[in-house]
Length: 191
Image (cartoon, rainbow, N blue to C red):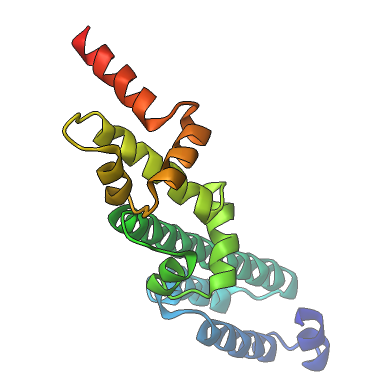
């Protein structure tokens, strides 16, 4: 684009600057407001650009400014995605005891089901179901330390409706049944 602008304006630096400013305005209008609102470097760049009198330095300066814009957009997007994954994890932690699904969490953070599925796995390193199961099992371990709460009650408190399924999953994750885990944890507290 820079080459085209340069050739189109017969190397007239004033016209080149004018076209580059128009292009910059178009680029900035396409960016999210939160990326451009805090960007003082654009004002500094415009002042700097007006002082440049040779095409080579103008090109280098313009390209560097565009690179900075790209970096700002990437950083903003990364912060936004980190915020979304935090919001998703918070929602899961607050609702693990309910019958929640991947779709419920995706809706909570305004993402499509399919995109959220990939996004979650890339961000956390495991899929939603595995994360939810592990969270529920960790929560059940705490509950099972209380001998006054039955295994059936513990199962319901963490969001499962079938105690047999809960026992099967618990054993798969921990290597022992909920009853064995409870006996082990109670005997360790006595010692």
